[in-house]
Length: 66
Image (cartoon, rainbow, N blue to C red; front, top):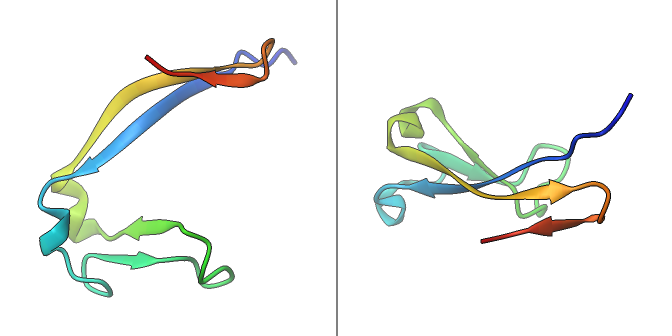
């Protein structure tokens, strides 16, 4: 199967500074608590904005940004 790459999305959350950890989001995962991953809960979904930011070029092995 040929790898066609993929897109890179920029994730923005409106008023993220007002969101509460443990209520609106959690940092890390149960198996990797210090992983740097932020998981957003359903209460935050309406404030999420995804923007296409670039793409992965598999033939070049790197990400291309605007």
